[in-house]
View (tube, rainbow, N blue to C red):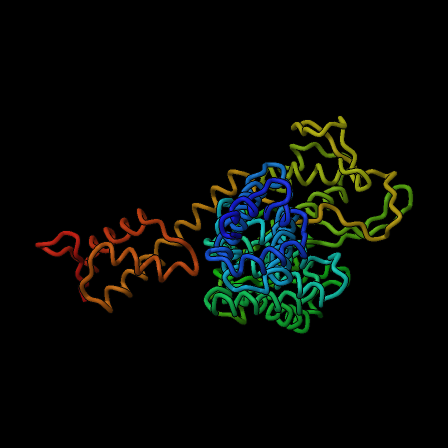
Length: 476
């Protein structure tokens, strides 16, 4: 009798399963589960309707242009949705494993509909691991990170997440904005447990570099303190190993003479103790603390970027400077210099410089001077704090191209491993096995696999069978 009305009862518009799920009607859902547990295909029907609803809801969330404006809110909504259905399955569906598997499959389906999901999940973690995090304590933060790892498992492009996570972690570490070393390392352990050492080795190398840098800086001052003038600026150097850190465009600028004096002594010390190494200053990544006395007598310590420091130090020997003069003196790239001057002269409450004329656009002849009327309730004033933002479309395209290039040798390595083991294999079997090997890290494109096979044939790693062109042989 009940079986005859099953579809109608489950699909009723205002009181059926979807309505119960939307309104969290746990008792009604429990009754429905218990009732249809004794009907042939009853639970399969409930599961199917639930999956369809979750996929539709998830798809509307991840493709909504409004949601894409705020990556942190985007991920928080995914976490809330996951919590909601985890609770429903736990409370009303007896924690049924078939329902849990269906939930996981649904989430994997719609999360990967948005190719920005890896970036947004990394930005969410970045938000939680920064100083000033709003979580009550580290225990709460651990719970949030564990939940984020559930979303991470659904990603088909884990290597893309790694690329973004590396960028965001580097910014946190180099700007001193990491909330806690323990929390950072806890997240690394979670990623390592999930994906293995290869996934986190370069991330762990970043922490090793920072510890080594501290020891090197201490060694430098211990051996050269007597050679430095009493009023020389104090410098803390972060030595970043090429390969462990995200690739940066090396935009050098002209440092102030006081800084050059110390930095060159450090270069001599470092290269004297590390034969065969090269040292290249990444002036676009540093920060500085500058003590300033303004014309009204107020004294402040400004926390600024290296570029901002280079600009401000020019006003020790000049009252007024045009944009063109600042550009010629510092050699800071134009786009960076304009952003730098806007943050020093146009941000409300942080206007340590005055600009003439007072417009956001900056022309070559616009002039700048120190704002002698600057006041702040704080002694330490932070200017232009670097916070990770979602990428612009051109940046996103550049990251995607880098990731695609990084995948090519991984696909080739998988093909060679498989062929070395099997010696002879047909085309479809290679495609299947390569996909299976690389799936935990990313979903390889069949067209790219085919191109990598062709490249390996050209380089005499493989050859086509002379009688069957769909068969390949490994050449030792």
